[in-house]
Image (tube, rainbow, N blue to C red; front, side, top):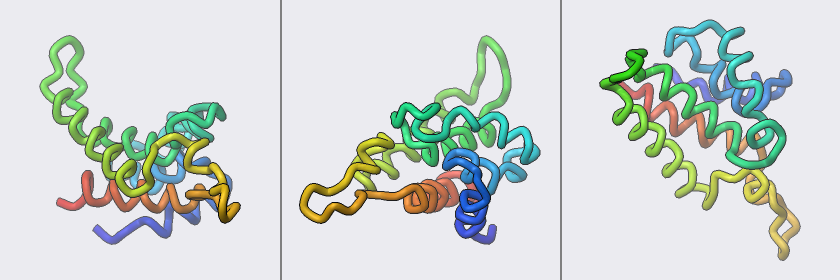
Length: 138
């Protein structure tokens, strides 16, 4: 698969939130159309509905993990443990790279330099790169 990281930034620049940018760039690879991905991830933007909690870009990547792996069996899914493992791998990789997955912590200014720790574009690119390795490198 050719990298779609650039596409995630193009989508964000068009007005997609961080979760939507990640989810929509890869939605065809998990069997859903862009409008469905756009609608399903809208509430994850700005750290879960503007609450600046879990980073939307990470949420978009975890959303893709569920769609890629879940078997859809109600009551006794055989896929749940693997889906959780994929999600955990994504979150841990993002946290290792950035120190946190919390939006307000990522956007906090360094007291010494006054610079934001990680802007949205950086978070989107990180989450997309991780998703490409964890979910789509086959």
